[in-house]
Length: 212
Image 1 (tube, rainbow, N blue to C red):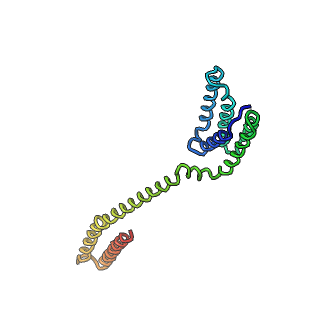
Image 2 (image 1 turned 90 degrees about the vertical axis):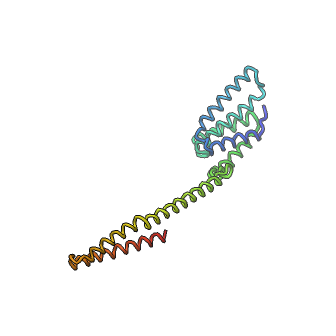
Image 3 (image 1 turned 45 degrees about the vertical axis):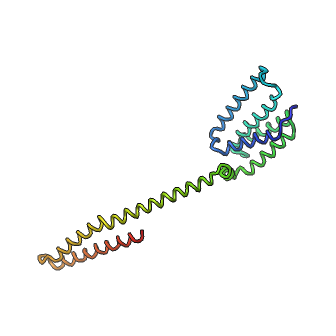
């Protein structure tokens, strides 16, 4: 029996977990397939005695630990439909290496299943995503403030420019109509009422400008 360091087993399982909760999770199957291709290639070199046969058991355990762990973590963790594969993994590690390594992997699985619901928090902490999110929020707030200032300038320009000029022209026209002696009295009253409404509209525009 060859002894595989518990530390290597733990690192392999943790690496699979980190891949599963990172953006690389979308490529979990490809990573597992690539790992198996590397395994087949190294096994071929061992059979050709290009590499030492002493690493065969260690390679077997590490590759299958990574592949099975990756499949479990990327398909639901404890609720994964392939969770049963972990039993075969632990049995194989115990059989071909040592119970200590199997125990270390078991404890690692248990701890990772506990923190799995908070995986986003730990990944944010590990990769500084929370800091990046804060910076992005600050940029968004700055952009919104700039947009508000631009809108304020646009409203002020409009109320002091085109809006005001048009209202003054309408008021001047209505004032001339109200002074026309040929217009009947009841029509003059309507014109004066319209004049006052336009003036109120002008005042409301100025009030809106101050609020902005």
